[in-house]
Image 1 (cartoon, rainbow, N blue to C red):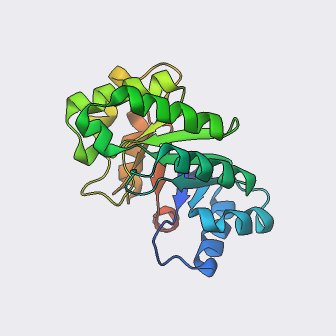
Image 2 (cartoon, rainbow, N blue to C red):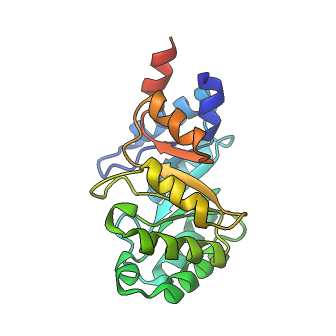
Image 3 (cartoon, rainbow, N blue to C red):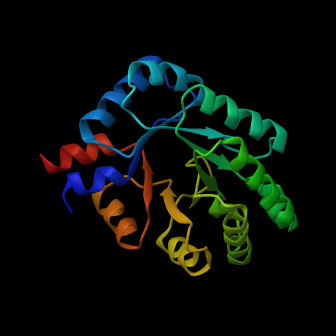
Amino acid sequence: MKNSEIFPFIDHTLLRATATAEQIRRLCEEACAFGTASVCIPASYVNQVRGEFPELKICTVIGFPLGYSTTEVKCFEARDAVQNGADEIDMVINIGWAKDGRFPEITKEIAEVKRACGGKLLKVIIETCYLTDEEKIALCGCVTEAGADFIKTSTGFGSAGATLEDIRLFKDHIGENVKIKAAGGIKTKADIEEFLKEGCGRIGTSSAASISVEEE
């Protein structure tokens, strides 16, 4: 695949705790040059980026990276992010609830966050590295029933990232209106091509700049 075919699927990402305003600005400049689907950045930079890069789609994260904020806090984060100019929200589920089998509560939380997004795109991170296949299947049902737009594999801060096996599992158990975002450990053009061939609608990666260099 050509880079021009790949970049529209990439959420160009910088979520490190040490990310500076200048690094975020450089990320956005790269996203504009590459034509990525979005930039995925910390919520504290959304307002700045909205003002400086009005043409960009901005994604931010809530309940990130551990997922155990209360539902009320996640909803506040989502509303605040949208008010500051976010176009897309990536939320982390309460992973402890998943381990406890509290799937109706997870569904309810996702639905409440979706409402708080005010029509903006919602991607739901389930952090696959901590889950059994049975839990992943149950969470496919939660994401579908709650009306979220995407199920997402990973935060990139867990013990492992996206796998092709998990993408295949998702495809077999999500609803027809739910897309898949793979993230975590996806660093090369070959990696991205594999996940896209499996049907992912988005790829979260911080490596778009190195992928650009690969084609030169």
